Length: 317
Image (cartoon, rainbow, N blue to C red; front, top):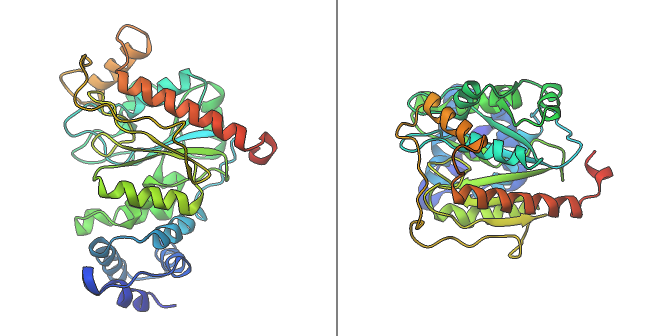
């Protein structure tokens, strides 16, 4: 179906817009990602969905279209995925620290996101200062994992069409559905990854939980720090674990009410170089890891073990 027909459905304003079916959403996003529409149509799509908001079925269709255009990653064992798309504005970006702490526990970790985000300190900058590996294909990802290191892959290498959609923000000035898709992306073969899905606004928690249930996803859902998939080092957030789309209260963690009694000593600056020095001090044992991150690591490793029990090795190899 032509994209104009879809825009007529979703572009009637917040009250009058109608949601697409999952099949229609998949067709729409496929046209957008494949460049079969004009720039004007992409702008209309981005603004219409920004006003309406994605339904569960629409998000599922959008994500399926993106997955079909990702590079083929088939890890030999379940992998933790950290989508890093917001960066730091006020606090140090500790997504790379989370990745390193998980790698120290023996987890395979893949961080994906933009290489640079003007005005923010992204994970790619900190990875570079830490000397951690970057990958542009599946083989390079495996090489990094073989060295027991977390690996960063840029969105333009992981899913080039999605990266182009994210760039629309620079023109229209607003995030679009591509950003939501990027944060729930699961590019590894089915049953082979644990996503860390974060939200900023509480109302998104319910929507994302319903999406994970609808799609049968393996994930840990939390309110992240400035949009990053890492716990706020000053307070322990609620961590909701989903295995094959089912909420697992036995693996989840309740939030710590209020501020921690013992606050971590964080660096005064949050630039990449300062953050990297702090992360190195924590990883080497010179500084203690913030308790909320330690708890997040424990929760993620528990969820990873549950995935291994649920999916026999031959199904994910």
